Image (tube, rainbow, N blue to C red; front, side, top):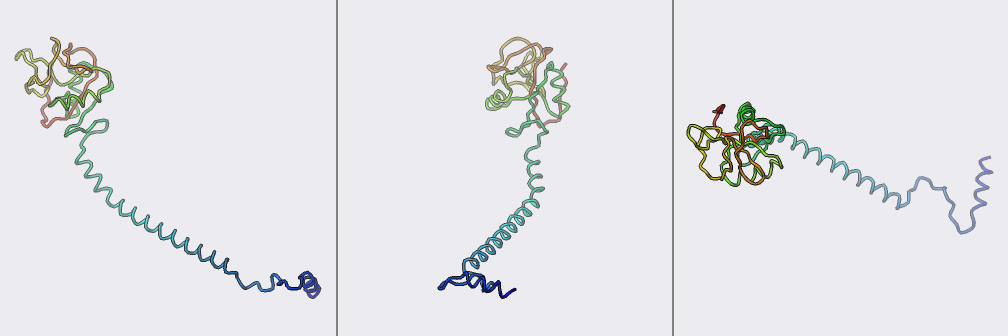
Length: 198
């Protein structure tokens, strides 16, 4: 029966044509080239994977050092903003001036003490449209403006009005009745002394 199959296939081959399938162990040059390209691609993929893994391993080892450095340069609590050596908190709730100062003091901070026009501009940019209490009030005994930490106000800004506590609005610093509910701005200061005013 095997001879019948061989005879039938030999009859199908026309004179001058090569018989197919008679030499199955030989590969054509195209197939060899394709196998070589696949092997090179696999080698490149393994090399790239090793490089990525090794470079990520080095990054993971450095992360705790970076985190420690970040914590040293940005000492703010969560929800506080770091700006030029101070941490700032912009409240989203409302309260009167004294309660706002007490909130700040509970975070080792004070209602915002403003040292420069640049800092005042920063506070205006970040406070939104609402009026906010800052750490300035009128000392009735001294008859002058005083910061919440007890230091005297040097009149670097104009304050409108005759009430006892100061709020920051979009246009200026205004005095207002201390019992009014407003948002507030805290900032961290260097001293640990926070006075309760009222």
